[in-house]
Each structure stands twice: as C-alpha cells, then as structure tokens.
Image (cartoon, rainbow over all chains, first blue to last red; front, side, top):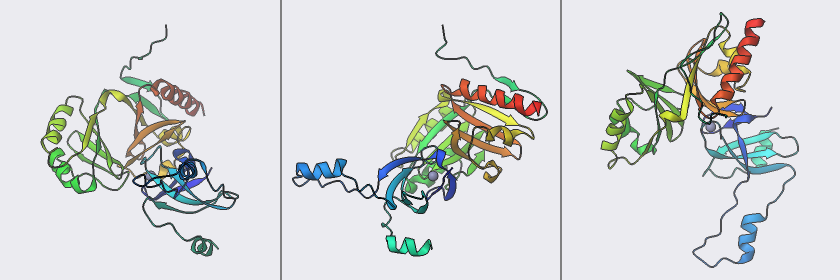
Amino acid sequence: MLLVHCPYCEQTLPELEFTYAGEAHVARPDAATPVSDEEWRNFLFIRNNVKGPHYERWRHFHGCGRYFNAVRDTVSDRFLITYKVGETRPELSDLLEKSK
Amino acid sequence: MMALTPAFTPGPLVSGNVVSVALMAPAGRLSLRLGQADIPVLSAAIGIELPTRIGTRAKNGPVDVICLGPDEWQIQTDATDTQRLTDACAAVYAQAPHSLTDVSAREITVQIEGPGATDLLTIGCPRDIDKIAIGEGCRTIVDGVSAVLWRDGANSFRLDIWRSFAPYVIGLLQTGGAELAAE
Ligand SMILES: [Zn+2]
C-alpha cells in the first residue's frame, strides 16, 4: 500500500484514506473577460497525461478532508513531495535533485 | 421486510477476556466548522480551548472536542447537553460566523476495550494504531467506512460510525472478536 504524507495532518498515512483528484495547477480561465470555446475545452478536458513526475491533486477524504497537491512519479508511484493548496509549485529540478 | 432504520440497543456486542465491544448510549454530537481567526471566540463560548493540531482533543466536564481538520471539530457531550452548547455558540454568531450542526442522530459509538483492542481495529483500519497517542484520535477508514476513532487508553477506544454503515461494521467487529477469542 502507498503511504501518503498529508501536509495538513503532518502525518504519513495509508493510501486508503485518500482519493486522487486529477492534475494540479489547471487554472480556470478568467470569466470576467471573453473566453473562447477552445480555452474552455482546454480547461475542462485537456490534460498532460505525464509519464514520470506528475503534478496532481489528492484529497485526504477519510481524514482531515483537505485537498492538497503532490508530485508523484506515474511510473514508479513514488511521491516526490506533497504540499498545501496555495503554496508555490515546487521546481521539478529541485525535487529530483533532493530525491537522489 | 428489511428494517430501513435498524434499532440500536446499547449494551455488549462482544464479550471476553481478549476484547470486549459495547454499543454506547446515545451521545450529543456537534460538528463545528470555523475560520482560524474566530477560534478564541468560540473557545470562550464552548468553555474549552479548541485544539488546533489535527487529532488532538480537549475535555471539560462531559464535553470532549477533537480537531478533525484545519477548520473542523467534532464535539461530543451528554445527549441532553447539545442545546446549551448550541445556544452558547448562537450567542456569538454575529461576532464570529461559524457552522454548528447537531449530528447526534447521525452516528452511533462503540467502545472497544481489552488487550486485543488494537488487534481488532487492525482488521478494518489501515492506520498504525500504535501511532495514535493516548488521549488523541483521528478520522480514518474502517473497511471502507469513514469513522472517527478516539483513543482513551492503551487498550481503550471509541469508534463513531454513521448509523447506516453501523450494522456492517458491528458485524465485522463481532466476527473479528470471535476470531481473536478463538486464537
Ligand atoms: Zn489530512
């Protein structure tokens, strides 16, 4: 079983308490200005489908209930980092350096 | 016909030297959601310093509070005590907006005690039970069912289960209790 570190609970806990919530840092278009169909399509449906380190959202569903962000390698399933919503997206080069 | 709302009669569910499980009497339960800035006001209203580290608890008389999330607490008290707390919180609502919901009827609580209590919990709960400090607790999962686990002693736990899932979880605990007793 995967162990996931929840940045809100500050504990590393079994995967069964968590749910996956798709790619992270997908910004919603600012609807105050005209948004083209293509921009909406990209926001709603177009994802990177990364092979390797992937920025993604998780939710500590059966726990504190919070959404948070993570970088997980989609090949090895290894988590490089988890961080709170609103925190700056960590640079991949730094994470890979640290994980060596 | 199958009963849609099973009757829950407080009393022993599993007895023995290894582990005992009992359905506890109905309790008063309140769910509190609140922003960081208003914690002191609600603490004063409830009469307990609200704990802010997830999993920690605070107690005053019959009132037991657990911090479940950065903005979420569960308050447990006597079944007759909810109105007093509801009124106290309503009195400070204008000053400190919050959400306080009476969820007394949503859950039942089972008490799990004995040298086999930890073993019994591990049949459904993936957490490392030993890492839950005595006097703390957590919301976790028990064989697919969300539940709040309170650790009151080395071998003493309470488990809050939503009533619609409770017959299943109780059945699981009874099966596990019988297996532990037979070992
Ligand atoms: Zn958490």
